[in-house]
Length: 263
Length: 259
Image (cartoon, rainbow over the protein chains, first blue to last red):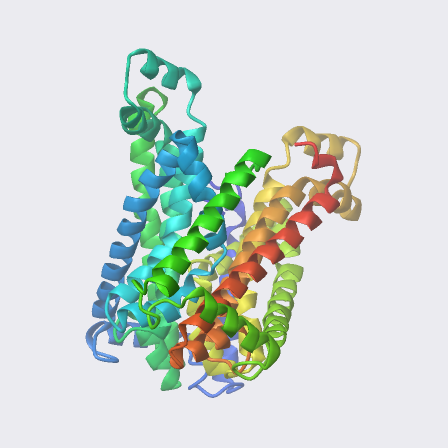
């Protein structure tokens, strides 16, 4: 299921049978007219719509333009969450008093579903870019903080003691001891963050936006055009996978840099 | 962050009091933050009384909560009743994995919220479309973690089972299920959180009832106090559901309580 060498390659005919069953049932259900094509288009029609959307604008833009404006919002919210969340988590891991003050507040806010910020996002930012960015931030922020904090807490005491013996200041310990030591945990947190942020963005765009891939889905939905909705879902899935792959690659590179002997 | 000691609890309590005081000072007392941007404590208290006593957006608060929670429980149970056995099966049978994994890989990258428009096209704004969306939200994590759970069973345990000729239903009951249970519960917790977030989103996008609908209605009415009441209710319900699941986890795995 996850990457790496698959010991079950011998069963590949079953894999093909599985896919064939999935598309066969879909194709039969659509082809026999069990549901009108408006509600259940044939698989090949969805694929054609997907490629048509790449050059024909729908809801104002082509699929590529929708994806690009979504991605820009995502990048802003995600980077903001990482830029605030990672240092906050590290500092909380070092300064006991900060941990004690922030943790109760954080635990209260954490359980608010990111999407529940939509009304305030609309109230504060109207239809501007701030709304979606706030919601992505709400989705991506908690894993950044939690993982940096955990990473900082599990740093080997020997390293910290050595730095203290050498007379390093508090901030230097955070920046030069805790940050590098906590890096694997931080990067793992960023991956979770990116996934949640991307998902929250889709939710935000379903409700407050006039462009972006989520908006395209809503327009397809109100036109009762299932082929467009499904094309949008495929695009969302592809971008999500691409973002995760990028971060996985960054993770692998960072870990190799940390343990050159292991690779 | 996880362990609370009395001293920590006291500091946390003081912090919360401090924030409440800051909130009161910056809204009611001085008016630094305009009431149209963020509500003051008195308005929130009034809004809470309004929704619990006379009702708001087609119902009282308890009715909205009951409606939302009932939908989440339905979708969550429907998803996990299929997802957990499927994940376990894929974990111990290479054939089942080969058959289902490619289909699963197609569904997995699509975030649950992206199913909402499709659910609305297919099933409308009624409860059925909510249950469908929650089903997809809860299905993926419950399958993945059950699968990982079986795969994490240590090799010596499997070898011992095969040496003792523990097979079939007994193998599943006495080796697979107990071995995978910690991961299964991780999956259930993730499923439940995803279900709750997704339901709130689905209700925000279109519903006649439920906490998401309260959020939408108060947003349309530009009623910040009610928005805050609805948000806090969403948080409290989400937290309580996770708590119930944690309790179930401890109750069903008494042998792990020490760790």
